[in-house]
Length: 80
Ligand SMILES: [Zn+2]
Ligand SMILES: [Zn+2]
View 1 (cartoon, rainbow, N blue to C red):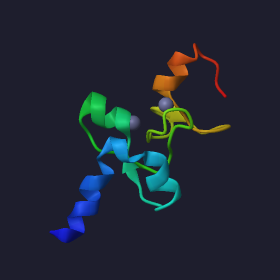
View 2: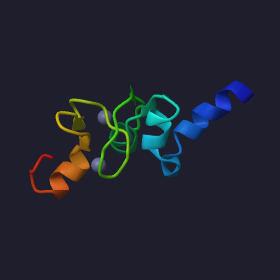
View 3: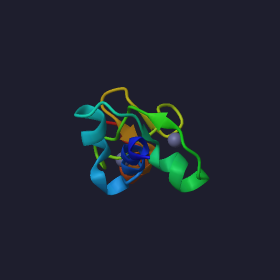
View 4: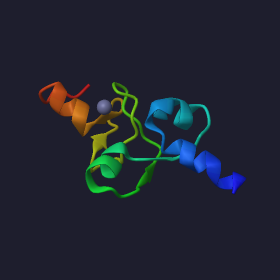
């Protein structure tokens, strides 16, 4: 049971996906997949702006730095 507790922690958005990925090298679920579709897709990418994990390709781009589609639409289409 104790082995699964860190996994639950990974699902907690307020803990900071950037810290989990960069410092702890843990894969975390894409926040957009989870919020919109209720599905779990683990990723090691996170958005440089909102620090939330995203799955590359579908919900974000990692060309210059990570940017999720949510922040991408906030910048009205200006990547990086
Ligand atoms: Zn996704
Ligand atoms: Zn973002």
